[in-house]
Length: 120
Image (tube, rainbow, N blue to C red; front, side, top):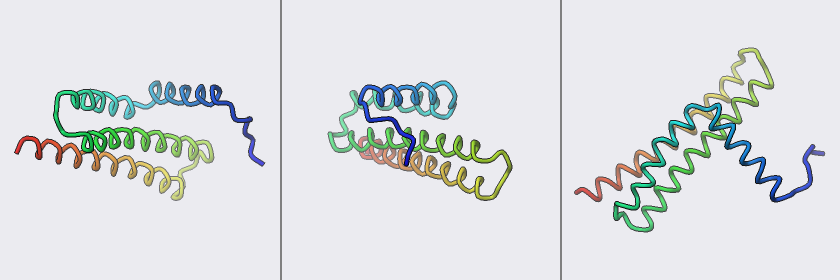
């Protein structure tokens, strides 16, 4: 049986906010991505990309931040499980990092398409 408290909406909201605060406090890459994505998403008010493309751009940014959170969770869980350098631990960390990289490529492609379509 899992060691999990009874579901309570406000308690779970508090856990999520604590996780966000932890990401902001300890993850430089998360803060850097926020510094890039917040201005980009705010710029959507000035571009006339259309509703569907705007939704894709917002989804891409949120997806990248989500994969960064999952990457950090995997890294911490691996560090908790073993302090030794192990090929499986390295593989888990590298795979999680690849997910972040792929989401960043997705964002670059989305913004590239949006800007090329708008400018040309």
